[in-house]
Every structure is written in C-alpha cells, then in structure tokens.
Length: 497
Image (cartoon, rainbow, N blue to C red):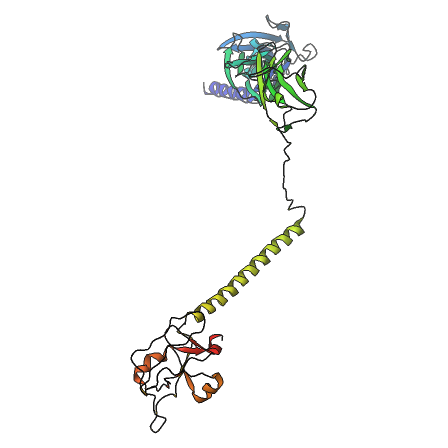
C-alpha cells in the first residue's frame, strides 16, 4: 500500500513539473480603425519534452459570454465560424505546421462590433488547458464638416444674435473636441450625441450679431481627435446697408476758387445702385452738375453754394445718408504751422538752450547789481544812521583849553528841507549877535574847526561825555555842506562816498 501511494505522488509531481513550462503568449491590447486590418497574436510556448496539442480555440468574450470564433485541430483542420468567416483567417498555413504552436489570426475590415476581448485557448495532453486574452479596441474616425448657416448673412440696425456657422464631428470614437479660431467676436455652444453603435457626434454653433465689420472675416473650426487636429475654414459674406461719407470740402472754400467738387463714398454690400443729392433748406445751385456719386461746381465759387449737402445711397439691403456743411469765405485761409525737428538739428537745439541759459544768468546778475545800487542810494538819501555824521567841534573839553561855546538857545528855527541845499534860519546867540551871516569856506573851515566822527553806537554815550561844539551866531551852512533830517549836517564829500 505504501509503495502504491509513493508511486502516485511521483507521477503527480512529474505531471506538475511537465506543465510548469507551458504558456500562451499574446498582446494585452490591440487597436485599429473601422475598415482596417489587425493581427491578434497567439503563440504556445511548449516544454521540453513537449506536450501534445490537441486543439486551439479562439473565443470572443462579450459581457461575460464566450462565443467561438475559430477552431484549429490537427486531425480535423481549421474552422472559422459565422459571422467572422469572411473576415478572419489564420496567419500560418496550419497544413504545413501541424504542431499549432503559432495560431495568430488576422482580422480584416474591422467593425465597431469587433470591439471586445478575445481568448486564445490551447488544449494539451496530459498538461490540460492553457489560455491568454487580448483586448481589441476599434476606433471610428469622425466625419467633420464646417458650413455657413446661410450663404449670405444680412446685417441690419435691428440685427439680433444669430448662428452664422456650424461645425460637426460625427460618429467618432472616442469622442472628439471642437475649438474655434477666429478674430470674430462671438459665442459658441457644444452638443454631444451618443449613437447606437457606440460612436459620438459633437456639434458646435458659432453665434454673432451681424455687422458690416464681419464681412470677409475668416472663421476656422478645429476638431481634436486623439492625436490629430482636423481643421476647416469658411469666409463670412455679410450684406449690409451703405455707410455714407462725403469728401471734397476741405474747410477752405472761398470766393472765386475754381474746380471744387463733392464726392459721395458709400461702403456697401451689395454695391450701391442709386445716389441722390439734395441741399437742405434750398435748391441746388445753378452751376452744379451731378455725375454718378459726385457734385461738380462749375466756374468760380460763390456764396450761393454755401449750405448743407446731403447724399443718399441705396442698395438691395436699404438706404443710408451722409451730409456735409459747406461754408464760403471771402478770402482763403492760410494755415500757419510751426514745427521744430529737435532730433534732426541737435546742435541748433543745444545752441538755443545755451543762449537762453546765458541770457537768464545775465539778467540775474544785472538785477543783483541794480538792487545793490538802489539799496545804497536809498540808505544814504534817507539819512541812514549807519552812515557817519560830521559834527563840528573841538572834541572833548579839556582844562585850560579853548573855552566852550556858549550853550545853544532853546529854540532853533530851521526852514523846511528840500532837494536843494538850504540855509538854516538866523541864530541868536548869547553874545547879542543877531542876523549876521557868515560864509563858509570848505577847506578853510576844515582847518579852523577840526571835526570828529560819531557813529550810531557812540551816540548812546553822549550823556556821559562832554562835547564842546563851536557855534557862531552869525554862521551859515557852507555850500559844500548838506543838512540831514535829524538836524545834523555832513559834507558833500561824505554824502557821495
């Protein structure tokens, strides 16, 4: 009994060892587009010594259900089942390779229904079954299109937002993405629809408020599908009413000017068919000739041609007007323009700037000198107390010196000061002299009567000093002396210092 059990264990071990080296090699993922051809690899790796392959079966796995696709048997041959019989075949000629180690199949004319998982199963003896699986993805390239909603788009003053173009990516798998590329300002929307076969259709509309500026503008739709970019473009054809302007009046129409005209320009789609001219609050001048969209004024300009001219342009969409006010002057106006090209003449600019700076410096210097001069004159003529005053006398009194002059009378009378040199009234002295006058000789008196200088600061100490002034009852102010507003006198030499 023990011998029998041992033999069974050995046999089981040999079987396990012999099956351990067997495997089925396949790609994990494969893909292809609808209508294309794809290979699904299946290779059996046998052990040494090899096992016997009894049969190979290809199966389609859909929603957990297996469906036989093709069978290869060494004794019975190969068999491809419907509905794959016309589109599936074995890559190798199994009649020449009966070992069935390579059973790769070729899928042609792929359909969306072929998108599924496929199993390749090997039946061997005595190892048993070995299998592997591949996932097949079938893609559908979308059909893209871009079209205008209308061959012509009409723009009116009352236009509302409208769809001008539609971009479609139909029956695509996987889902595509739509983008717009344009200078045209507008809005767009997207709508996705899943079809019964698993594809998706994407639709996008581009909406704008039509205007004349959109005419001939380019609108591009970009469809992104996997790693591809599919583009398509259209050009807008916008019809609009005329946009009218009048040219020809330059603001300088004067009497007797020759060869003047007004031209009515209209931007319109379709083109203008009719132009009409009129003069507001009056009738056209007699010397005006109308030709198409222009008014020609024959002969010299007159006041009769003044007024508001209106041009009306009409096309199939509508009519619009433009106007201009014409003024007539007696004489032509000569515009005066002044331009300075600083960059072209930098040396002249530097010269001008330097001249201006020098002139300003000279003016400042002259102003300072004038201020100093006037200030000096003002201080002297107003008797500035900083100016030294000459006081006649013999200085401080000393013992044994010349006796001091008798004290001045309490009342001294002076005439009113004037610009001319004036003499003081007669002085009555204590010696009894009255009304006597005496001429001063400048140089002689300077020798006879020495003088000293008294500063403003020194004048504060007069109370503490004894000053002896020499006054003569019959004296008068000399010609070279000038009286001051405080009653003192100075020589003309000191005045003009």
